[in-house]
Length: 461
Ligand SMILES: *Cc1c(COP(=O)(O)O)cnc(C)c1O
Picture (spheres, protein in one colour):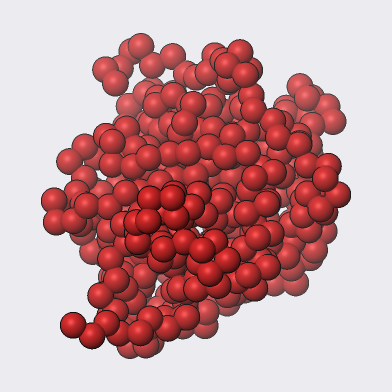
């Protein structure tokens, strides 16, 4: 048998790009639990969700049955501006590590926002536009999601209001300016522009904010203006659905060359890139067609899957959003101030949480100095300066490749390289100066977050 020489980069042709998203929920035996109304603890109806999200996205959020959802032409056209994303064979990294493993990564950083988040931003903005809405509101932490949404809204000529976590707003002025250049209105959170912001500021004066808090503000603003809806960059089923384009493209590229991954690795913040990358492969596993090992990688300082609880929880600090059943550290959890590697959200995608709970996926927590060490090693040999978030996946991919070196196994490892780190140079600077510290919360510290979980004794979980 002659093996095809695998190129350094595999680009599929434009006409080969996926025309449908894959909905992994259709193949799950245990479906993710429904979102609940925080006041009544009853499943959110489509009507109730329609007050927060636009109608088509409500449908996608609740759809546990349709395996494939067509990608509208206008979204596919937008994808063409920066997709297909390359599937890269990390020959240089393999050489450096002297490993028999074959390492591949799917690179999602080839757009101005610098991450995979644009895949869902354009979809969410598109459906809002279709519904005749004027604009959308959202939160952003590190800034990638806000930037992606600003780009999508500029393309569709819609308003975009972003609540940016205050410490990030101050530390990342360039992110903020990219958003404003694309026409977004950016407010540091918590702010005095919302009731919930005022309340949080009164209780915690001087707080530098959190994602959960920025979500509450963005939701409040959208709920007060019928021309706006709230959109979220991760966690939700709809976001994971849109991100399945990553996995679909990867699978098409791998199938062309007869490549089958043994291990698939992704970093996990809210779970959207990992869920999207693994989607079609997970589908095969759920249908009993193939076996894969999936690994979610999270920061040891925000250990949602490895140390969190699988329970209904608030998605935001202000407790205005629906309750989701997911792995969570509690909506009051805020990672240590020394944490600079991203992936700070207290919860995790309900669908991924269910898959993890049912044993289809593993999770690992890694410390940030190791992550930046892996990032630097990767940057030197592969040329791309990775986002700290993505570098969590790099770290575990290297670990797995080094295990292959010990055992002599030629495993095929695939990981998601979700973005570039050009706006994270303050964090890289800390690492370069040897000032980066690791922080692992104690059980007692985590317990404080768990104490804030809602009492669900009225329902049969
Ligand atoms: C937002 C982000 C993540 C984490 O989000 P997920 O929803 O878990 O994918 C990872 N990498 C980059 C570059 C990001 O911007």
